[in-house]
Length: 168
Length: 354
Image 1 (cartoon, each protein chain N blue to C red):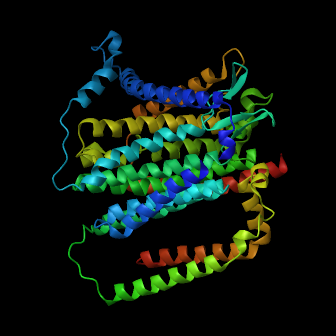
Image 2: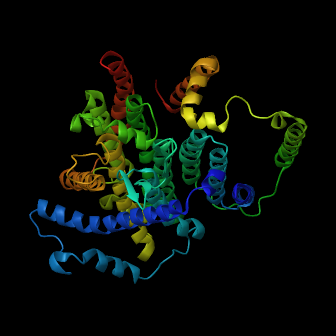
Image 3: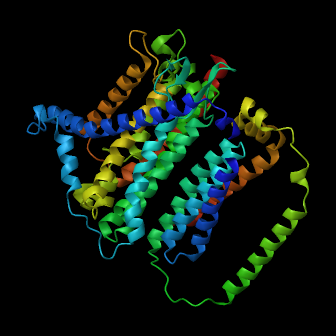
C-alpha cells in the first residue's frame, strides 16, 4: 500500500518537474513547480515529518511561488517561441549534469541508509511531536546557525528597503 | 500507513460519512449564506431582500444556481486556456479541504465504536484519546495561502487589464495579511502548547465556561482574536477589503472575464472561504464545539460559526471599502507590529500570571 502510494506520488513529482522545464508558458511552469512542491510535502508526511510538510507548503508553495508568479505577471512574459539556446544555457546544463552525477554517485556510495534508525524513530516523533523536536533542536543544539540565518535575513530585508527607497 | 490497513472496517465507513456530512453542510451553508447575506443586508438597509422565489425568497439560491448553470460559457480568445480553466478549481478546493482538520463536535458512539467528529482523526482505544493531525493549524494556514493562486491565475490568464489589476491586488493583499494572521495565531500556540486543533479545543473546555475560551483568557489573546478575524476577512477578500473585485474601479476584478459555472465557482469559493474562516476562528478563539451541556457539541459549533458569518455580513453592511494605500498601511504598519508585540506580551503574561 505504502509502496503503491509512493510510486504514484513519485510519478507525479517526476512528471511535474519535467513539465517545469518543458512548458512554453512561464505561468504553467510555475504551476508545475507548485505541484512538485506538493509531492515533496507528501514525501515529508510519509517520512513522519508533518511539520516539514506544512512548512514546505506554506513557505515554498504559498509564499515564494506566489512572489514568482507575481513577478511573471508584472513583467508580462508571454510564451517564448523560437528562441535559440545560447552558450550560457549549454554551459549551465553541463554544470547541472555534473552536479546531478556527483549527487547520484555519493548517494549510492553512502551507507547511511543501511545503518538502521537513529534515536528519532517514528514512534518517538509520534509521542513527542515533530514540531517540538525541531523546536528543541533548533533552539539548543543549532542555536548559532539559527541566529546567523536570522542575521542574514535581517541584512536581506534592510538591503531590499535600501534598494527600493529612492530617498532614505 | 500499514497501521491504516489494520483499522476496523467501521473506521472507513465513519470516515466517508464524516466527509459527506461536512461537505454537504458546507455546500448548503454556502448556498444559503448568499441568501442570508442578501436578506441581512436588505433588513439593515430597510429593504426586504429577495421575496419572489418561494416563501420569503427561500428558493432564491437554487434559482441563482440554475441561472448560472444554464448561462453560456465564454473563454476569451486571447486567454491562456489552461490557467483560465483551472483557476476556479484552484480557488474552490483549498476552501473546502481546510475543513478536514476542524473538530465540529465531541466523540460519538456508533455500534460501540467511538467516532470523533473531526474528519482527519481517529479514536485510539489503547491510548484512550483522539489522534489527529498534529500540525492542524499549519495545515489550515497552508491551505489558506494556496487559495491565492486561483485568484492570481484568474486575473493573469484572462488577458484583460481589469482582471490583471484585480489579480495583482489580490496577491499583494493576501500575502500581507497572511503574515499578521499567522502571527496572531502564535499567541494561541503559546497558550495551548500544541498545534493540534483537537488539543486546542480540549484546552479551552475546563470549568471556566466562557472564560476558558482563548478570546477571553487574557487581554492579549483577545487582541489576537480580533486581529485574526479582521486579517482573515482581508485574506478572503470580503468588504471592506474587497479591493480585488472593486466594481467601481475594476468592473468585477479578477473574475471579469468569467461566466456561467466558472463564475459560480468563484462565488462559491468566496462563501466557502467565509465559512472556513469562521469555523477556524470558532475553533481557535471561541472554544470550538464546547458550550453548556443542554445542546450537543455540534449544535454549539454551528451556532458559533453562524454567528461569525452574521458578523461578516454585518461588517459588509456597515463599512465602506478601503483605499488601496490604506489597506497596505493597515496590514504592514498597524497589524504586523501589533501582532509582533502581542506575541511577546502573551509570553510575558504566561510567565507572570500563568
